[in-house]
Image 1: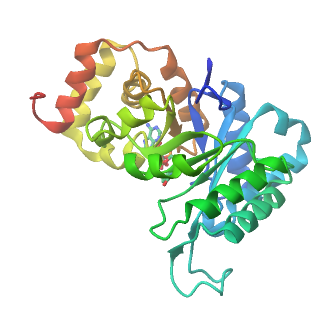
Image 2: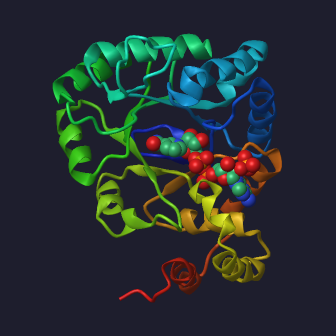
Length: 291
Ligand SMILES: NC(=O)c1ccc[n+]([C@@H]2O[C@H](COP(=O)([O-])OP(=O)(O)OC[C@H]3O[C@@H](n4cnc5c(N)ncnc54)[C@H](OP(=O)(O)O)[C@@H]3O)[C@@H](O)[C@H]2O)c1
């Protein structure tokens, strides 16, 4: 699979990324890491909170068993959401925290969980209404100078939130990780994708298959299936191709736990979608022509 720089000053990632949110046990990690690397998916998307703070450590167990793996992959992780769970008794309520000390502590914990000396890309998981851009800039700068985090980005930010934070930072935000799929195409119409293109910032697309929820809509799936037949592909593969076609440079994050579906997602990079078919797929979901 071709690798692509997510930003002119950012890291090179595989065009399709593996998301570990639903990898709930060690065997799944072993199977899926190996399947992903075998088909050229070298970038893995984490968050400190996945599996109620357990998944980074599960992934780290595989890295400890096979230390050669670390240099074959890029690790993305996030911080900024605090969950009210047993392992965090100090959290009286689910909240956001993007303070200096919280970001530093979270990264130290992630490094320990993975058993690595560096995180390739750290994202702020959600826009925090109390975010103080001076504190964030200081935390990012210190982590960068210490070599603990190589690049920084955000997730679920609007255009104005992205541009506000960028103004205060000495380094570029190299991505905005967003929910984008044929089922959630809003960013292509509300200016967020345009803003990312203006900054040459690639978009990591989460839930590229709508988390699998739409596969039960048999009528729409049948219509998408007819289109998929035209490209001799499965419907899921075509849904990845729909995202990869966009000039904003999307990096879809597959969330599957099945090795054959990881391979299927990787194969989508070879499909070239006809422009009218891109709109035809959109119409299948929206039920209407564009204006
Ligand atoms: N930044 C954020 O706020 C945010 C939020 C949510 C997620 N994420 C990231 O995005 C990643 C992907 O999210 P997602 O899990 O919602 O992604 P997704 O790829 O849209 O959905 C994956 C789900 O769809 C199911 N599925 C059903 N049919 C499938 C098929 N033909 N091919 C593949 N999957 C199929 C999978 O089940 P099987 O496992 O049985 O295949 C799995 O449960 C997460 O792992 C996480 O890294 C980020």
